[in-house]
Image (tube, rainbow, N blue to C red):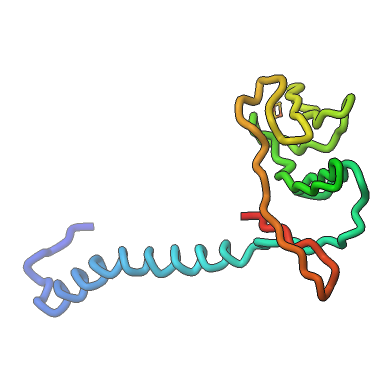
Length: 135
Ligand code: FES
C-alpha cells in the first residue's frame, strides 16, 4: 500500500499529532490507577492480645513474646524471601536455605545477611487487640 502524503490535510495531520502527544498522558493515567489499587493492600493487621507467651507464626508475621516483651517481625526471610515458619532450638529458622535468626530478629547464620524486619505495633485497649503495621 502506497501512502500519498500530499493528500494528508492539515486537520488530519494535527489530529495525528494530538493522538501521538496524548499517549504519555494515557500511560500516566493507567499507572496512577494501578498504583491506587496497589495502595489498597493491607497495611495493618489486628491480632488478639492473647496470642501466647512464646513464638507464634502467623501468615506474614512472627509474634515473639519473651519475658513479657512483645515483638513482631516480618516472616519474610531477608535472604530470598521464603516464609519463616519454624522454631528450631529457640531460633527462627528459614527452611529454604537454612538461615537462622535469634528471637530478637538478628541473623545468627546465613546465607541471610540482614536482620528480620521488625514491625511496629500499637495496642487498641478498646478492642483488646494488637494493631501491627505491615508497611
Ligand atoms: S530464603 Fe531464607 S535462607 Fe534463603
